[in-house]
Length: 171
Image (cartoon, rainbow, N blue to C red):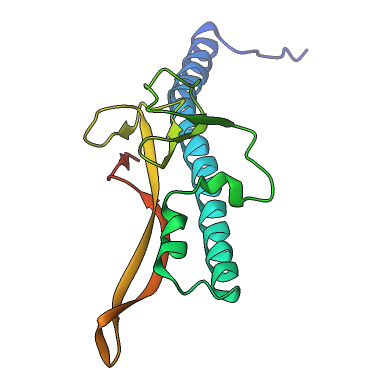
């Protein structure tokens, strides 16, 4: 007669320990991956605004807006107005908002500084800029260079939607 041999208690404990250690390692990384997902979503909206800015600039130039005042208006306009559809997490326009003015994970437009602001939801791996707030401020920057042959005059050579100050996510 053949008897089947099952797991011993020691083998079962070792398997349980291995499973618990692997689950613990996985669960420790979940917040990091959630923050990376938020970073990617923020960069996607930022990229859409950059594309809309270029299209807006092209439309102004096509209409004959060579005057610097019209082009400089791009720096004070709310960039969300250039988008075909507002982001779902756009909270609106605020005058000199405080960090708690908008729920985390949302965009807003600061009417005082004329900057787009993204308020972070997850910021464990984020290092903020000078003000220490857990948000990222973006602005429109127009780059001018002297015209060839006419150094006294300047021409627009770049339109950028960029962070107003440096920030960093640790990986």
